[in-house]
Length: 186
Image 1 (cartoon, rainbow, N blue to C red):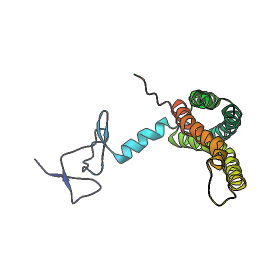
Image 2 (image 1 turned 90 degrees about the vertical axis):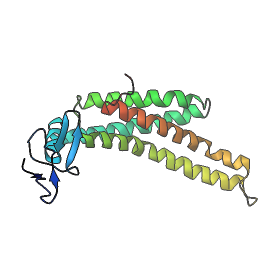
Image 3 (image 1 turned 60 degrees about the horizontal axis):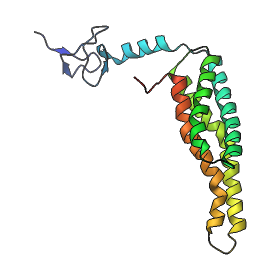
């Protein structure tokens, strides 16, 4: 039996072959798939077949996620000032709803970058509210704690910011998983 060498690394002997193109591959070039080991070129070629997103989908997904996340953060601000714990219930519902709406607008087309841009858009949409509440909390803390230290009353100025962060931490993964098609149930 002749000893094979990796097609990319001729100095590395191997017994592995890509199960698609049959080229010999070393362990560093092998990618484990559900159907066996493949070379990186065959894997990337297969992934390109599943990237169906159009250029316009990236724009649609970004603006949909950012605008709806921004509106949801305004809603969370209004609700959390009266019933703060409801944020924990509303955040995943809001995230799933935004994810479903964005998925429908792009008609189910997908790509890895489309998913990442959607997740980033959820964060970008909530950033103005986070910055406004952070600045407002800092100014409130300065106004209430002019005695030199941070009093407990002055720390309450950051409560709305805290609930915005809770919303973002819960809603963004829910929206991303709904949009990208990652489901955690069997």
